[in-house]
Image (tube, rainbow, N blue to C red):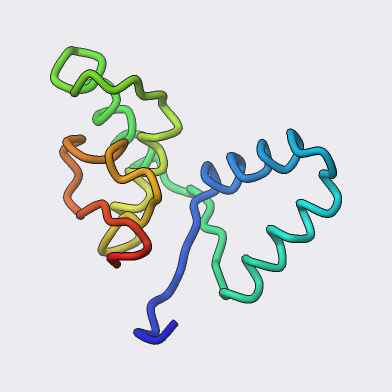
Amino acid sequence: MEKKTRLVISDVAYAELYTGIYLSGDPKSEEARVQSFVAVNNIEVKTSKSLRIARRAGELYSRHLSGRGSGIQRILPDFLIAAQAEAASHALITWNVPDYKNLGLRIPARSPDTA
């Protein structure tokens, strides 16, 4: 916020948050906590409206599956998140930076504490 950076979360990452909400012991209060965090930080939920993002995610995922990726186990939603970040921002901000290294992204992956 100090740098006046626009914060965006992809629909796939938002769905991952909801997985955690529904797995929690108290989904109603957990949802309120997440929604409050999103609102207070003015985080925009970005939906993928473009086949270009799906194509790019497929390209990145296929490279991984064909053996050019590292030994880290990855799933398609990770590539959708990466492709959407690539299309919408200058960096992918995640607490899971190692999951997004060496994917061939055109933008850097950074943790929130170094962004």
